[in-house]
Length: 157
Image (cartoon, rainbow, N blue to C red; front, side):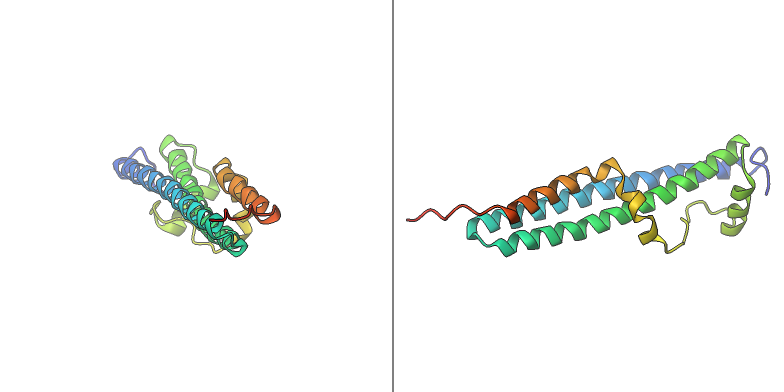
């Protein structure tokens, strides 16, 4: 692999800027998924209180879980892009390892291409350990409490 000290250095720096932009977009997408998921959950739970229908709480739980899986995918993708950024940083600073060199040859210098492995489900437990998943945990616990506790009676007219 060519040294970053030569004419390709500008290319590698431009790649690092594009990677930073991709990572920022992934983080923003993750935040938007959380916001939409909580809004959908709140709307369904609110309607569940209005109609006193327990199945709506279950529907809210399922809907929010699906948003959670989408968010986990974005977090996993963001982690892959950060790994690429770290490889590129090591390369620019001259601390490249043999594993990095083999990976760079594999992707032919395109750092914007994340690892194409399909081991998302294998990596899910480590992705779940992120602090950014705390809103899901809190919302799931609230939903379980709503399912377990009796609903208040509807006010009679």
